[in-house]
Image (cartoon, rainbow, N blue to C red; front, side):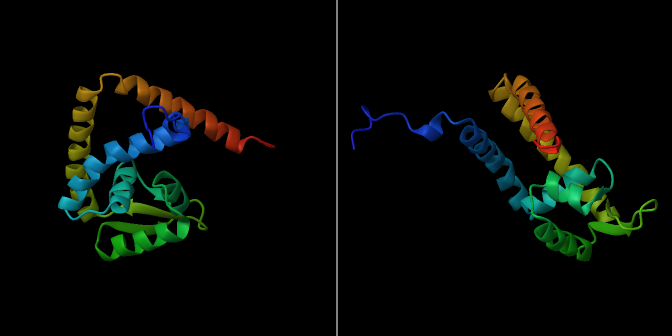
Length: 152
């Protein structure tokens, strides 16, 4: 096929594809560093999310981009490894909150430093990254509002 005269591919200008591809390309660099430390991407995401405090399993699954049954399996493994603990919520006994265990707290500090260093490298290569982050946060917030709106 003659690629010089070919029509542009739809995916090369499709926002969702561009977002996914950009995330994959930039994340892959950091994910390689995680694997070198023996940490899987789902475990990293859980640790990074819990660095801000305890979360419910549902909130963790959403933040970590995992289905709830997969999240439960990840948490089971992390609990066996001493990285997290699960406790019943003190105000709503129907809820279980996931907390960092001492071993998880020790590990996440080092990983957050590595993530910040990687992000600084990316920003140094792409000075518009700050504006992109603002745009992405706004996109997520607006889409989240649409999903929660009645009839929307």
